[in-house]
Image 1 (cartoon, one colour):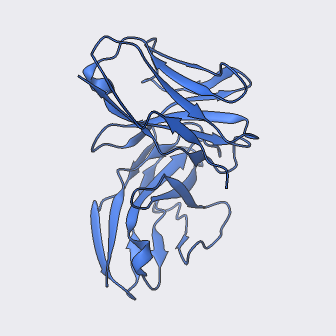
Image 2 (cartoon, chains in turn yellow, cyan):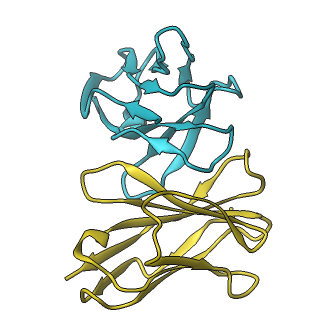
Length: 113
Length: 110
């Protein structure tokens, strides 16, 4: 069964460093999403991406964040200058259409020290 | 602003007993409501959504607009139902801007 794959599973980075989280969505899916969950808190929407553009983003998704689909398979989330409060589990998801089931990856745990 | 409230962080139920996981929402328009489940060491996955009106793994949920609730129910709990359950709301019948509740950890006691 096709799955959304995220790498790495755990990333430790120093405050102020840039980090790139990678995702391989399911191959025939057209919509891609990033969500995050700070430990003990809710899963929060960050951004959605369709047709090589951001279609929606939340207030959390400020200028420090960017997303890219650099080739036909990868979907990346970049945080330019990480802060301690960026420590969270980051989930990538994809769906065939905007209103069909979104399939989530297993998550990347980002720890900023 | 949209909000989803799951009042119970933890819920323990005996095997064979009925299960009800509560979810209340706040949204001014007509939202779509979802239940997601995360089994131990597995990824978040969709359990059901109100527009499909399906019963998945014996679970059902009815959208009550008057009470702004979308409680998840199952008449007879099974051990494999032990998991984290998240209620979520979409403002536009899609996967964008899903607002999740804090989740309820359901434990089925054998």
